[in-house]
Every structure is written in structure tokens, then in C-alpha cells.
Image 1 (cartoon, rainbow, N blue to C red):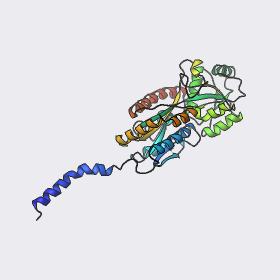
Image 2 (image 1 turned 90 degrees about the vertical axis):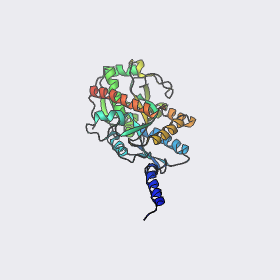
Image 3 (image 1 turned 120 degrees about the vertical axis):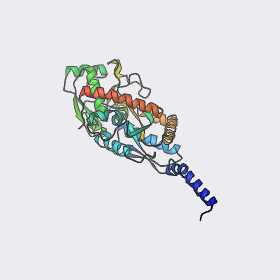
Image 4 (image 1 turned 180 degrees about the horizontal axis):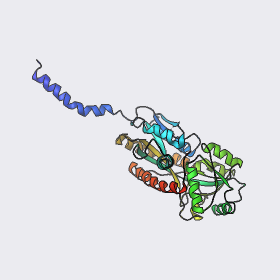
Length: 326
């Protein structure tokens, strides 16, 4: 028969089990490589901004591997769905974008994820104005001149986007609605092939994210007519807000990191602190500015508030424009 001492010892160990199990169940972070899924093909603004952030995060974590994985398809839906279903341990993150988190619910009728239910906002990284860019053959050198040209030639100017429902499509649709003009939309499968045709003159215009078209405006292969932020951007010196021609016009892209919804709060707090610290790094700030982006550190709670408000804004805008995905 067990002694009283052994019974007491056994009961004390059982009493400790509930306290030690959670600690054992939750592995330290990071304990394996971190993957940042960019739910778009290489070459677009998401990819161009995610990679320097991933590199700096790896350095901040003492060289712990941080890998960027491009998983494009269906306007970001394929990659977003994969991350929503990934283990919620902080080792799989998504490069969240206004398209995947605020636009897709209104253009895909059977979206397999919910931006607020299935993701935990981690860290807003940057805001990014889009640039209204035209081929040099277009006889317009300002937004006002382009609007006048489009009104004189309704339905004859072709513009390209990264696809139906892409940010470049929605931004131009909002611009046309505000300006009262009619352009011909030519959707592509990504910004890369769209940019090739725009530079070649097979398209006349695009309203793409700054990282996509900015380099080509610097070497005069394209002409920047204006940008979509309400006020001038330090990242885009010399490019005037479209709001000067269309008062109140603003459609700004934003980028940040989100995680599967059940990711522990303490892990989210660690990543948020690390990313916010990176945004004060001089080299990264310069890199973001070079790509036309403005660093925008936020708390996870403030990032969630942004997503919630943008969901409602784009519900109205997309419904009015009648935009549908392919």
C-alpha cells in the first residue's frame, strides 16, 4: 500500500500539471524559420516592400531565418487562405495589404477567409500612395490636363491594372468616378506585364503603387501626373496630390503584417515591437522612401481599427463602381 508521503507527493505533482502544461505546449518564439507569405507574384509593391522588412527583421532577431514566400493567385486570396489556416504560433505571417484585407471581401462572393475573424493584426508597416503615370506620348503633364484629355476623347484611352479588383484597378476607378471621365480598363495578371506594356506605349496610363512605376518616372520612360495621397508625401517629392485637381480625392494603399487569428498575444506583441523598432532604422526608412512609401508604425489595436474602417469604405466604393473579380 502506498505511504501517505507518496500519495501527497503524487497529488502535489497532479496539482502542478495544469500550471506546467501550457508553458510546455507553447514553444518559445522564434523557434524555427519565420515565413512571410506575400500573396502576390514577385515584382509588385507588396514584394518590393516585404523583402527589405524581412531582411531587417532577420538581422534584428540575430540572424534567425526570415523567409519571404510569394504565393500569388486570385488577387491574393490563395496566399491569404493558406496563412489563415497555418499554425498560429508566429512563424507564419502574411504581408497584409489593403487589397487582401479590405477589398477582396467585396469583389469575391465566396471568399474563403474573413479579414477580421481569421487574422490577428500584428504591425502596420507603411502607407503607400499610388501614382497616376502615363506614357510620354500622352499629351498631358498634369492630372488636370489628363482629365481634360479624357473628357475630349471619352472611352478611347486605355489604362492597365494588375487585374480586376487589384488596387491599381480600384484606384483608377475611383479617380474616373471623381473626375467624371471614361477610360478603357485592360486587366493583366500582375503589375510586371502591365508595366512592360505601359513603357512600350501599348497602354496609355496606370494608377499603380509607387514602387511599381516610380523607377520608370525617374528615367523618363513614364511621366508622373500626380499621386493619390491627400497631402504631399515626403517619399514622392515633386509629385503633386491629385486632390489639387480633384478636391478630397485620396485612395492610399497600406501594408503590414498579420498572423493567424489564434496567435498568442505575447507573440504578436514581440513581433510588433520588433517591427516598430525596424521602422526607426535609418537604412530601412531610406529604402521605404526610395520605393515611395511612408513608414507608419502602429499598435496591433490601431491596425485593426484601420482594417475595420477601410472595409466599410471600400464596400461603398466598390459597390458604386460595380467592380467584380475575374
